[in-house]
Length: 65
Image (cartoon, rainbow, N blue to C red; front, side, top):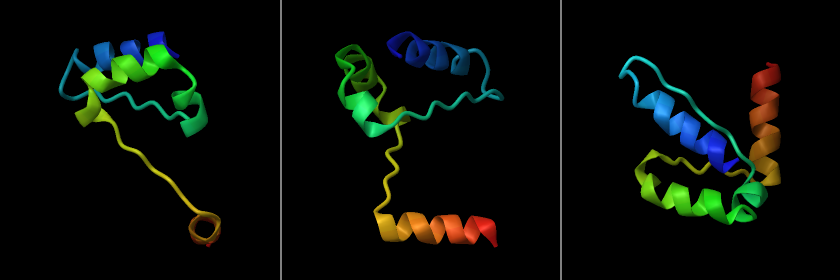
């Protein structure tokens, strides 16, 4: 995972017209110390998205509609 994170950062540096996004579940992020250390260098690039059960069900319902 740490290598994948580094690859995303490297590819994004190639061109301002190219964006690679990586999605990772919080428990995986929390359990990979190397990834956390790398991510601290790029904190401004990270976006944390979280849902509770109610808001996730609402999101799913909206997508189905």
